[in-house]
Image 1 (tube, rainbow, N blue to C red):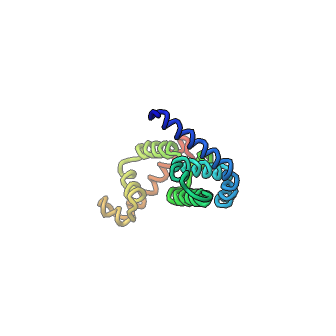
Image 2 (cartoon, rainbow, N blue to C red):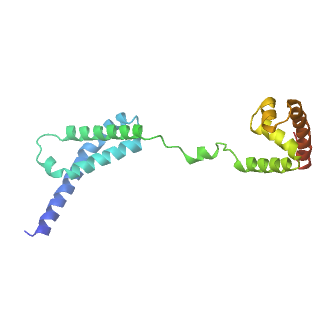
Length: 179
């Protein structure tokens, strides 16, 4: 017998074994797996298919087995379910993209436009008013700290901040920004 004929004979024997296994054990195996996967029929069918594929890969070993091979099939199916459960727990849960589309995201364009408008409005202020405003509002210094940095009295800083805010408000209103 040639090597090709031997392989063909072995393949037909394996196919016959798998057909016999499927006819005899697929139904009860599916029922068993359905309980393990909480009734998820698609997953159960995948597990049964993988179990029978592993049986086909081990056809030589199974052909020589005495008695029923259903316990072997049940053990393999159970281990496949356990492996699937462990792998799902090890990975983060997948999220449907449709749900992500409904989640509001920060719009950086609006923020950039606001910053550009404020920067332009700050450019309309006098240098003295802008310095007082930058030190107190943007750098977060107290009036006394700003006075030390600018080298002017604290009362002058208060006055410049007051008039700078009034001017800034008018400048922003001219640009269409309302308070």
